[in-house]
Length: 222
Ligand SMILES: [Zn+2]
Image (cartoon, rainbow, N blue to C red; front, side, top):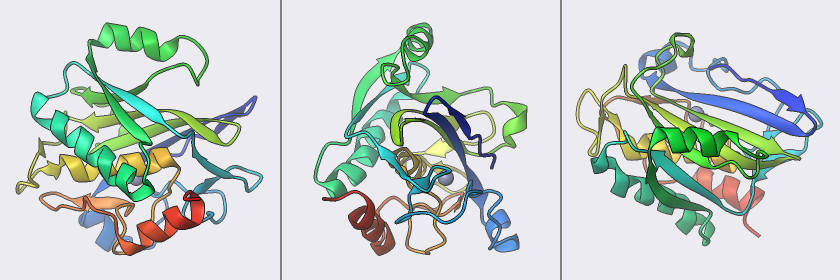
């Protein structure tokens, strides 16, 4: 996990990758290198900037998916978003449909960070330096508010399934985790949390644990 922390006129870009367990997790249970936290302790499980201010999401983010996204996963996109929407009792995430990648590129790069669209990417080609992780979330924060996110699935090195099939990553579980990062949540070592830094193939972790609810109550819910 590499954390890129570019502070530039109040704009901060953070990249989280989800590891695949259990190999990494059992070998280095206390390792934070894949956790993306290099800047002191968190607030209610949420990220902080260099000054200790908590970083959270703007009230609502709508995602577009690129067209190469397999159809079978679309219903799960909405279900994964609903996990957080229901916990927060408001529609913080919504799904705006699929578009071809040319339009997405254009729309994601134009304008200010807050005007650019948030994306779900299905990556048939995964950058070599990303170390074959199953997925990553890149968020852009503007004055401590996450205004945009790009969630990428590594379709080059991993198979995904809708039902946690053996040898595959469970799509919904991965997306629930990545959406947690978009809310501003960091990795958690609590065993009941969807924010654990690794997820094993063939396993499901798609509903929030007690510690997740506690973090939301502490950090977001008014
Ligand atoms: Zn993660």
